[in-house]
Image (cartoon, rainbow, N blue to C red):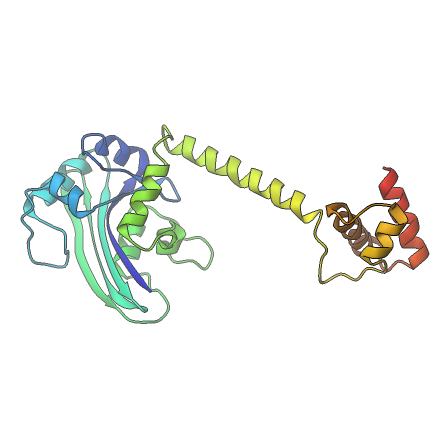
Length: 249
């Protein structure tokens, strides 16, 4: 599977303000308040004179470098590229701050294997202030693995256009996660667990409660399984009594 990325990375709100002057530019939110401005060929042509220079970057020109210098006066930012196929590939990254290029460009051929902190993208993310989360490297900590190509990141940016700023986007994401969790919990109420025994089968439940085949049968069995987890095994009589109590509650 391939992975291709060409992007400017920096504070989400800062990049959003910069992209307002670039037609078709969007900023995709990352974790830890970062944003990613995917640099497509069209965006590159908007930002530069389209003359490309040789070097570690496939999308770079003197005019583009000058634009990055200007943008960095309002906050440090990075330009990153990655190109992988089947685990092998390459990365390149550089950092701009206070109107100058302060680090890089760094380039590395990346073999199959575990990530390293000194790989170019991890190294530049550390300079952007990213803090590692658990066992994840910085690349995955900010969420670079969510999409596989620059166009995918452009779609993410388009979906985030309604958010006025990073805090608004983050609050909307949190609300959606909570709503999804509630919906999943509600669905689980009607699904029998495969890992917990129950002494009454569906046919018996329908006969006892005088109900037809329906999601309520699954809910009844799931309730008995939850009771089993809380109190231990139930006899058939205990399960029947608990089922009647549950149906009347």
